[in-house]
Image (cartoon, rainbow, N blue to C red; front, top):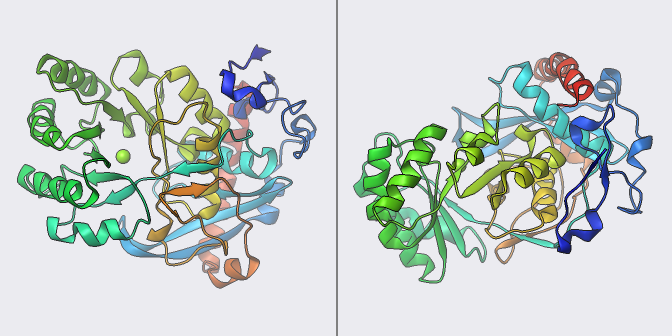
Amino acid sequence: MRELRTEPDHRDARGVLEESVWSHVLIVRASGVARHRPTIDSVPLPSLDDLLATLRVVRLPLNTKFRGVTYREVAIIDGPCGTGEFAPFIEYGPAEASRWLGAAIEAAYAGWPPPVRDRVPVNATVPAVSAAEVPAVIARYDGCRTAKVKVAEAGQSLTDDLARVAAVREVMGRDAKVRVDANGGWSVDDALAALGRLSAFDLEYAEQPCASVEELASLRMSLARNGIDLPVAADESIRKADDPLRVARLGAADIAVVKVAPMGGVRPALTVAQQAGLPVVVSSALDTSVGMAAGVALAAALPRLEHACGLGTIELFEGDVVTDSLVPQGGSLPVIRPEVDPALVARWAAPTDRADWWRERVRAAYPIWKATVRNGS
Ligand SMILES: [Mg+2]
């Protein structure tokens, strides 16, 4: 047993972490935590047959091309606590997919820790568009006072980045927060040169300016040496790493971008956030409102939330599996868990051969998930 370290304003979530078959999802004992949820200790580990019995697969249209296709396939499962989303990207192998399965199982069979806030501020996202297109992109996000701007796009130049960021700053005004995301596209030298220029627009932070953890650490030193006061956020270095805490140990970032599904659930993500000791920005992974609700639950449960979260992405979908989609209003999302609408699941049902493919995927990921649960890792 380990004590769950809690913040003074996080009193409701105080509990004892139990080492058990459920330790992978770091179940907080339900006693005194959440009267409205079943006692988690009493929830048995779901079998593969349990998961397959409720599994449904949808194919949702997107309004923009993503990884070469204009749809997103998602599997959903039901359990005593609600619906969970299993949607690792198509090319992921069983080991990586098993973490996403853990997040879906947590959502359906364990539920989430109680929230400490009832709304989560979200950011607008500006892709690598021309400066002229920026006002129309920003206008899609009702009331957002933070924008994340894509930079370092392949085939574009620093001049394009400067023009785009300038346009965002002009449209949003001096009091808005503007962050840039390079998705690891710069070398340390390129990042230093680019961020030296871009920091004239008073940036909130630079997300994943370089690809490796070592480069991020080196860049932070160079920024400091050059008097450029600009925080660095790590995204891919946490999401795709075997050891997400390496970023914090090497002093490679000031801020951690955390996504629920790649971490294996809300509780493992909370643990990473706590152990990293860095401010966290919760982000989505092209989730439907079912998966998004898990991101919202993580953002709502964090003891401190200092930055707008990247959870304003539901509008990339032309369809959803819930009627009340998690669409930002007034710059934030409500901390709610929308109910799945069976009519929408039927409407967007994936072709049978694709549904079979997803069932095989669950079959392949399940034993890996179960083994990590047993090992408590
Ligand atoms: Mg990112």
